[in-house]
Image 1 (cartoon, rainbow, N blue to C red):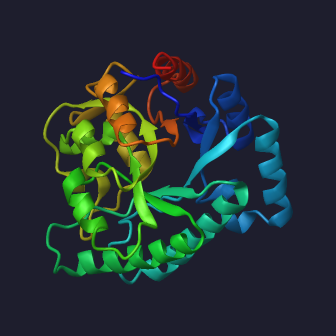
Image 2: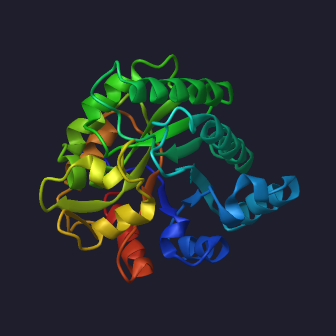
Length: 293
């Protein structure tokens, strides 16, 4: 690293597995400066938070000296591949973005489903239409829906994003997903997607054998896949393994240098989806990143 990192460190509150309020306290305790929170169901579902509750939560988080790096609005299933299901999913996604802005962040991360190779397919058209509408809405609020990397190579994701009318749909860059599933190079991926990266995850892992991304992330006509399914695959299955930072194949020296080279100033948010000691792993991950400062 030629220069010290200036990026703030975030933690996904849900990685602690103890609920939002307790997770916020743990995030503060491990040394995080910001947090990402799932906002799809349960206590963080936008439908369950009235204006008073939103003000109270923002005040509580601020009182801990934390910022919100992003919300997670991943609705699961096939993402936006199913045109018939998209209107309800688009509406829900917009409400999550409304909540994000009210809580003080401009990023909602999500999975949109695997982008097909065939630009003339119905699935491609459904995803493109949904992302165009979401991108326009986000742009009107000076905010972003950020697609998490992993289901397809970076170059293919960029080619899809380039077809949209705004950058309101951009990228949440996760290097571990790339090395675990597609075998793509995260360092080159940063350069390829440099115009779209608005949030990042810090996660490590390795691919154990070649796997069809459709078996990981699902695809219309295949079984629907959930975040829990992906975490289960990453926790000791035969295909790939998520590992503590520094124990996988992500070259963090080169990855962080690449982020610096494109002028990325956003959050480095730690995600830990597997393991029996998430708090200890996250604490070590914070210390790992701080070595670059």
